Image (cartoon, rainbow, N blue to C red):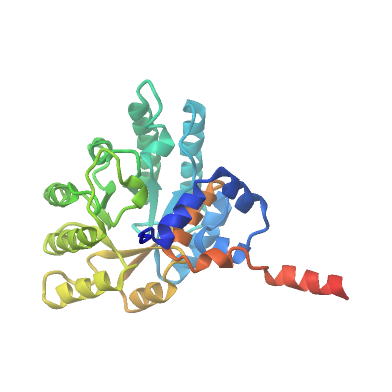
Length: 325
């Protein structure tokens, strides 16, 4: 029987094995590979990565990697860490205006906790957004597996009543997204258009297969290009960049009036090419102690990085060589 399981899917399955996670987190894995995709565990690490990117003309979205909280105390801790990261960027003297964005995942703020978890997360998000607005930074509500699109959108809409610049991430893999895009255009909501993740399949929202996800992405991109909405599109797929360029050339949109986005370390050549020609290039900078699930997701995107995780570092090779003398 033919095996239709992709290498990426196999890696994600391995990533969910607690024994494999323990092995990766406790082993001296190749720190170069980890630091390629993750800024580090602390706000200082995120600040350093942000400064380097801003100096190279990038825009930045800071994302705190944290598991869903088990109680209200953990949810409050996540809120405090995001606000701390925001304050540190201003204290460092960075030009924050529009160039820095904070990503908020409702689940990490307690949206799945019992007894009004949604309202608890919303109150935390309001406090983060208030701080961001005072500092000139932006806020984006991320989509996530296990949280229906309707919940993400209602969360965003509630924030936008007081903070209308709040943006939302939408996944083209969800069948409802094309209609959601049209409604966001009408309400002038900022949108980050992404593909989505395989972990979202089987949830409350119906999803497309891989080919239809790509087609839906292009249709949504075209609608955004023809609108006056503020939006960001993925530069991870060269075809999307080419379609965006073609729509600009056809007069559907002026260059520089929308953003491209990439995750840190994933496509450095595309990142540099887009930024150096003067287009807005926004880079997602993740930080936090819960880096393992995020790292494995990026390795699944680029399976060739899997073995690189376990190759000895230069320092380890030098130490081994000294031991043989």
